[in-house]
Length: 249
Ligand SMILES: [Zn+2]
Image 1 (cartoon, helix red, strand yellow):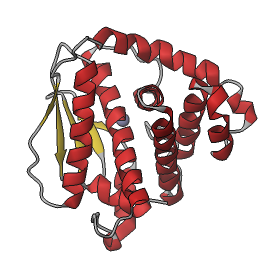
Image 2 (image 1 turned 135 degrees about the vertical axis):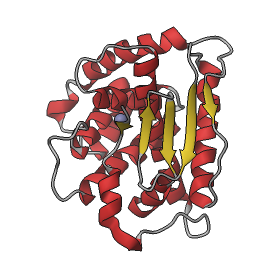
Image 3 (image 1 turned 180 degrees about the horizontal axis):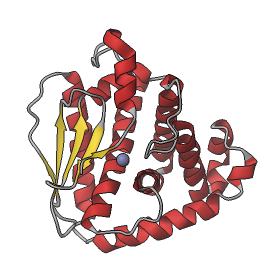
Image 4 (image 1 turned 90 degrees about the vertical axis):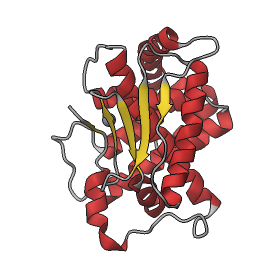
């Protein structure tokens, strides 16, 4: 079964032929950071699907939610505070951008509605460090009714994913994630490849799995990302960088 991981495919179709293409020249630093940070968040989400498969983790609820939680957990706990906050803002805006482009919320979808994914992200990120991140929570509009529960939600996330990550953490790491060679041309492909390669190296430095996972950056014909359990492959579509460039706030 191929795991479909975003609702971006629909948006790409709606955006039509006027879609901007990623270009280093035409893109300012904030936009480039937004694109890179969202690629990172998306890659972590797919890494979550991969870990659920390889470690045979039990999931109580939607796997998509569990993958989102891992993504926030890694962003929150694996980076210096200043960069972690920037990641949280950019990826939260990614969900907002998606929400703004969806005309009708698909409640049947395996993913929660984008606005709910937005608040889940903000909540867990805030809950990880409420003392230092209350400004972020306020700025991103997390209501107090939810904020009260966020430290507990973060604890649950840390309990669930922290255990899995402890299991694969090894001094010296390993080479479990294999980056497939890039066969695409163009700025979007190169940017995506560079961002993901850097992250693959960083994860390999920390973790070792008992199975290998191949990571591909390639054109898919849609702005999307997947984890495919049969060949154990994470696929990041090069079209994603173009779409993110267009959605950048
Ligand atoms: Zn997914």
